Length: 271
Image (tube, rainbow, N blue to C red; front, side, top):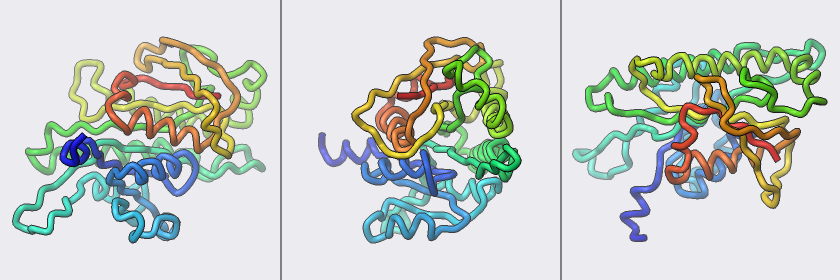
């Protein structure tokens, strides 16, 4: 492949929630592959200390809150790096990796913000609509949102081992309600009912998260059509690592066009 062809395959990716876990893993892989990455962060040093600009010139860290649609919009429109200022073009992001989450409070069996995901995805959708309407040239722009949710919340049936049902429906009830609200927001606006839509989406439902990459382990996937609420295929499992979730997102939803087959679907991933 020529160098020109290689450049055309590089993508521009916006990350919301990339300071840890699955989002951080997907960011690492994307930077290593040479994609242009923009990450919104309330405390930029959490990322700039990990990824110094001298070694990662393809990373831009924007300070802001992921519940602020204006701050999110600043991450979706990226000026090109042409040195000729009279010939500058504006790029829009190809992919949005949404991995917001709250800190779990065990004493109350909840998270510090019980609506963190719902508010975050609402702000992302508002920002997309704002950017599209800001310039007639942007009307054909259609980014893909890769949103991290959870197994155990499907309306199509059980996708977790039976022994884990009490944990998911008891201790994790509140954060999982927030994940379901996230999914419902995406489906409600996805255009399948005949209306206009300005994005594609893939909901990634990992099983219970652990630490430590295990690239030697196969990742099994189940697929649900979210609007029809039916499984196309089903896999149940107990655990998968945050690092491997980020790797799967990178390999399947960022690199190449393989992720298109999952558009409008929820993909459960597990070891």
